[in-house]
Length: 231
Image 1 (cartoon, helix red, strand yellow):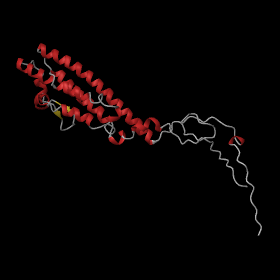
Image 2 (cartoon, rainbow, N blue to C red; image 1 turned 45 degrees about the horizontal axis):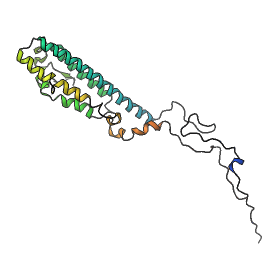
Image 3 (cartoon, rainbow, N blue to C red; image 1 turned 120 degrees about the vertical axis):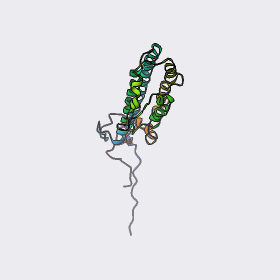
Image 4 (cartoon, rainbow, N blue to C red; image 1 turned 30 degrees about the horizontal axis):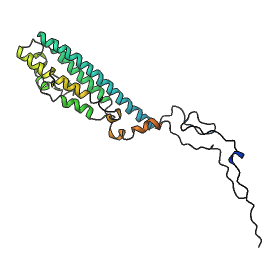
């Protein structure tokens, strides 16, 4: 039986087959020729979810800031009306409109935002002033209203001195309804944006900053690898 030993080819430098090239930075765009590229604008579902969640957090923070400015203006106007003995029906009506406006904005993003953002506002509305103003949800529309039991018309008349003083305490005091609402709206500013999102999004959102740019990376071209072998 005959046998032979194959000759072994000596190990050669890779540069013998291909000139040495600089390695592209991770996630660098555009990629080197010959490497697969992801089509531009081809956002997958995860990217869409992350972008939508981030936009929801930003939208609510903006809404909360504008709401605080609106409360400051309402405090200034209501204070002037109470100090001069004028009717306060228009200011109280503005308050109900503001509540409905805030809630409408929250519901637009409720699927991404934490429930605490709106729950803190409803908790503030448990204030005795809400009962005094007959502020409640409509059984038909579910919106906030104070027109039940002729409550709205009651504030269309000048108030007595004792009524004025009581309303000042309930609405404008340090523990008044308007300051409670303003404090509740600051909840969004006191937390990171990622902490405003539902737990299933908050757990993975930090990866969103990198997800859209990550690609499978190989330091050699995809045309194939040339390996030394036995002959």
